Image 1 (spheres, one colour):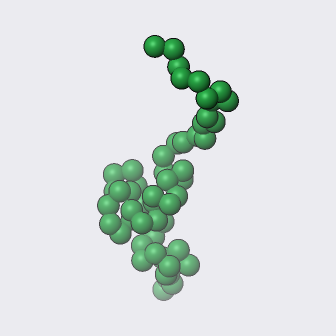
Image 2: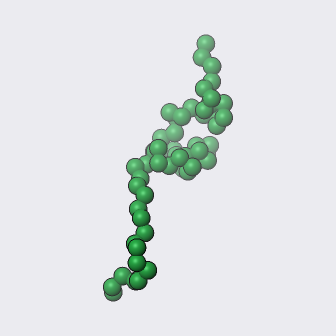
Amino acid sequence: MTGKTAFETRYGFARNEVLLGNWRESPFSRWSFQNVGELVPSACVAAASSSSEAPA
């Protein structure tokens, strides 16, 4: 007999059910958009330090 994990109890699905093929679909999207860094490689990019526009 296997009980539900805390994740399954809270979100209604197992964490390993969220895949790149379904992360934008319900019911997975609510969790995945808030935790997208766990699914898709991402990085923080700092803004430019000057406020001037880029040359044309």
